[in-house]
Length: 406
Image 1 (tube, one colour):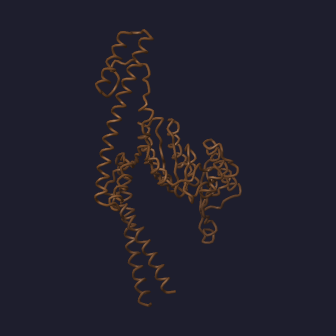
Image 2 (cartoon, rainbow, N blue to C red):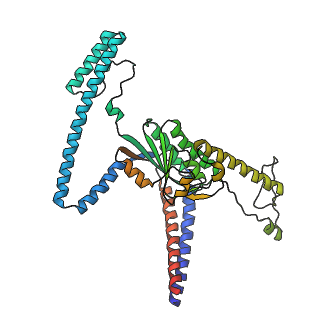
Image 3 (cartoon, rainbow, N blue to C red):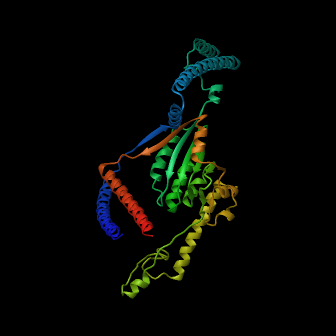
């Protein structure tokens, strides 16, 4: 046991030295990275349907008889060809019907009848020959007739992930992803945000919520799925959605405002250290960490928090009028089922369950903005990862030794 104690002490010293060096290197690298211009990133798109299908096929290949699996693949290829042929035939019939409708409409209006009839007849001839594409290059400004294929077209879902910290650092990527999606999204499409955040800084999360509001303003359906937590600023973002889904034990709510800070005034006073604060404006600084806080300053600070809380409640009520805001705006957090009872969410469902179900009748595209990292950022990230890993291993081993000692 004495050997283990000495070894543990030695290991702790080594880890302390290594962590200290990594912290210094990380700080230097991070400062160097911030002094350089930000490298432009790019949008990466992954088709989730293909990923789900690949997972399915991998498992089927492993559990099925080899001959049966090959036969299944051959049948799938035949079905795909038959479906493509049927779709082409359907498209041909729709083109012909649309051309005929335009021809009849042109005859009714009488405006430029000969040109319109000629264009419609050409489109009908193209349809007979199986030519795909537009009905005619000489089409007028009249709205096109919506075909059955357009009405029954597979929906598109754009999936975005937001993993929030106290500063809502993922906001930088979110605004790029939303901007990219809105360039092509139609009113029949849907944006799904997999949201995880315990909240944080008011201004940062307010801006993040505004990015999601852009989706609704564009007339595109917005669905937010919470698997673990969407509290405080996280729920400020979630409430913007048309529908909120959450896992059974996801934590939601915390519609409140909190601020806390230590005060070292008495400590400084005991050590004969004066702290001088100079301001212009009656409420430029209401409370401070090192000076003596007055009752008036504390009351003003509390008043500011109450005002932010009121704005928070109004924001939530605007997007979820079905909520009894007075009942839920207490700063409390509720788990999935209770949150559903209080109308904080609309359905109990995990992101995996929702996305795999939608993949049956929709095309799912995961959209991710990736920054190009220079060597300085890569080293800084490696140092941070190393520190976190070393600390995690140290705590784990200390816990194991404590258990053995007992």
